[in-house]
Each structure stands twice: as C-alpha cells, then as structure tokens.
Image (cartoon, rainbow, N blue to C red):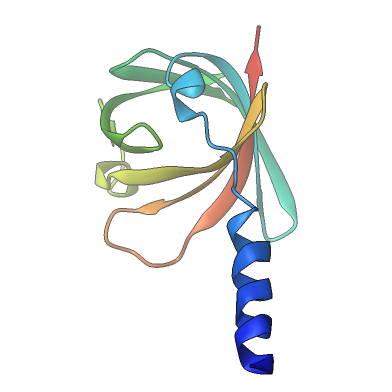
Length: 123
C-alpha cells in the first residue's frame, strides 16, 4: 500500500509540470540569438519568414531555406553554400518558449552532438 501512495504522489507531481511551447509565435519575425560553444558566446541577428531565414553574423549575411517538420522543429538548408560544412542541413528544435524568447537545440542532420542556445524576438 505504501508503494502505491509513493507512485501516486510521483505521478501527480510530474503530471502538473508542463513545459510551455508556443512555437507558432516564433515561426516568423526578427530575432537575436546567443549560442555558447566552449565558453565562447556567439551572437547573431536574423529575420525569418515561413520559408527563408537571413542571418547576420560578423557583418555577413547568410540565407537558408526552411522546411518546418512541425510547429517546433525546422530544417535549415543553406541557399548558396560556400564550404563543405554549409552543404550540411541543420535540424533545430524549440525546447521552451516565453512571451519574448525561446530556448533551442540544434545539430547537423544525422549527428547526435547537439548545441543549445536562446533566441529573443525583436519587436
């Protein structure tokens, strides 16, 4: 009987906690992002429509086409790749959202190593 109450308590506590994900709010717009890799913070700005994203990093523009898998996951494909790394598609998944930002993880398609970051919507 004691085990039953412990299991019931655990289930009731975990079922009340749901991560907020209003991904539709972030499919289009202008954003600012930060990604930390090996203690170095990389910052960029980008504009996103339903099918194209243009990112500005170090005063250079980079354009990618978008293919949305669902409201929270997208595949990026570089439009004019300049290197072998640019030929690899990137999978991005929105993990959590707030009213003005979202946290995400991304990786090259087919690779298991993931990086995380946060993006802020610019109004």
